[in-house]
Image (cartoon, rainbow, N blue to C red; front, side):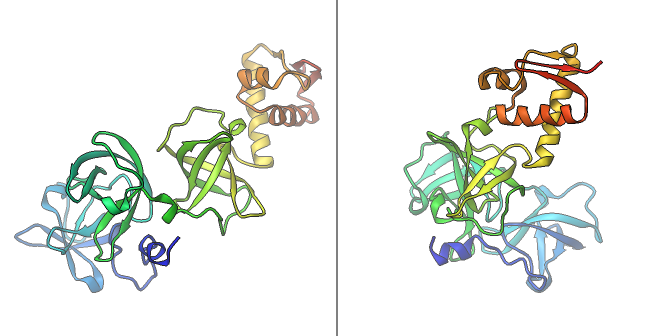
Length: 293
């Protein structure tokens, strides 16, 4: 990843910074003028809250979460309406239109987001959905890029097994499905971790299952470690109660049968019933788990 693009997707969020363009900012409404309400942008001066977006109950002295961007004239403007993704985030966008300078993406705001030709990994088609990173170009304007490898790193830092993270689902692979972790790193969900259907572009909570020696991330959709096992034990206990106290599953059952009935891998199921057994809640047989009377 080039230093230039790394800088573009890391907005300045230091305590001394003024507003962050392309991100949500907590700002105070300080006056009402002929053009509408204005928010205090600190060293950036007062920022017009676009009249067509102003809430009906907007008032001087009120604090609002406002998305700040540059208008067509290069001036700061703000709206309480949030886009599908902000600067430094990957979003799932529909191609709204094509133009001589690139494509425009519907990102939830009235003005579509430009995807320049130079930032397209492959040609795009109107009406199709795609994953793209939102960034600020060298002139401070907001734009999108489908060249995700320029922004997303293979080698992760600052994460450990068990950490809860934000995932954006990417393409399938022979091993499972790639996902973008915290909008910064690539990770992999193996097939046996995909206990529920997911789709490309879906944003969801996940967990770091393992940080490999090469810094790459193995992921999980369920909590990792004892918290996960306790959660799985609770799920099995609830399933037992719903099934009249008996499950035709045990530590000798086929993995496919266990997953079909419980949604758990065989290893997670065995550890879950082990927890229930040690708590003297169940009796175990090779192919049966039964609630104690």
